[in-house]
Length: 104
Image 1: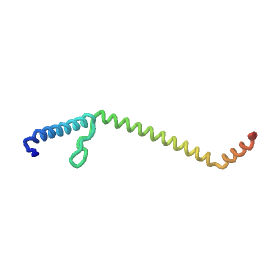
Image 2: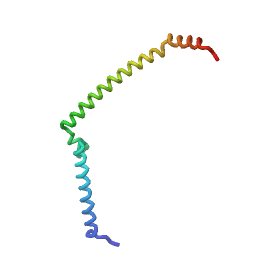
Image 3: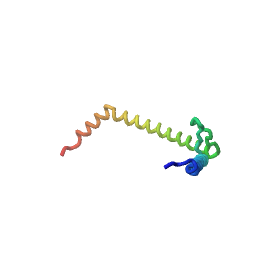
């Protein structure tokens, strides 16, 4: 069974149109949602800029600062708890209190 180029040409044409259409669709979706486009070597050639992007950056920056402050507070509290737990007088107090409890 021999297949000639004339028989495959329509199939090749359809596949080519579908591939180009898919590329155009994905490029349009990336632009619509603000993703950067990739150049031939993978570099970003269309980073999203505009008011919406700047607002997102400001929001994320303020949230980041808030979370860092909260993390610093948690670290301070943890340091205090570690100091109390590892304190010898605390352990001694616990031992004394355990001796005061009535045994059943």
